[in-house]
Length: 176
Image (cartoon, rainbow, N blue to C red; front, side, top):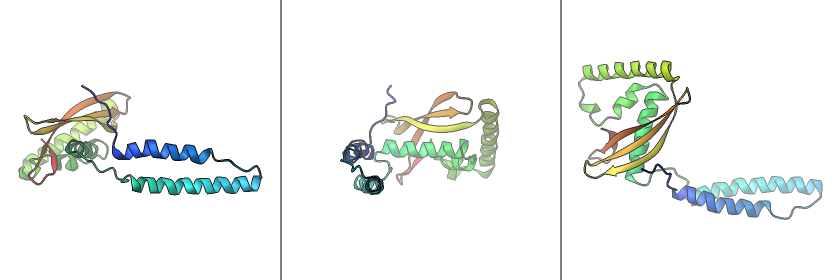
C-alpha cells in the first residue's frame, strides 16, 4: 500500500512557476554601485513578494480539498486534532455520524472515556504533537473512505491508525 503524497494544483504551480520566476529574478545583472545595489535588492524583494501573492491567486491559492477522499481526510484529521492536540473531546464526539442521536447519558460516558484516554496518552507518550494524513482510500463495497492518519507522539514514537469515514446525505463527512 502506498502512502505517497499526490501533488495538488497549487503545489504544482508553486514548484514549477515560482521556482522558475525566482531563478530568473535572482540571476538578473546587478549594478556594482552600493546604493544602487541596495535599492535593487529592496526592489527585488518587493517584486518577489508581489509575484508570490499573484502566483498564489493565479493558482487558486486555496488548500480546499478537491476530491471526496481529501474532504474525508481533512474532517478525520480535524476531529482527531480536536481531541488530541486541542484537548476538546466534544469536537471529536461531534465528528461521529451518530452523535446527534446519542442519548445524553451515553455522550457523557464517551466524553469521560475520551478525557481519561487523553490523560493516559499524555502520561505514557507525552501527548500527541502532530497528526498527518498518510493516505485515503475509497471502499466502494462498504461505501466509505478509509483515512490513514499518522500520529507523532511527544516521546518521538509514531503510530498509524485507520479512520472509517462515511458521507451523510447532506454530503458532509463523519467518522463511522
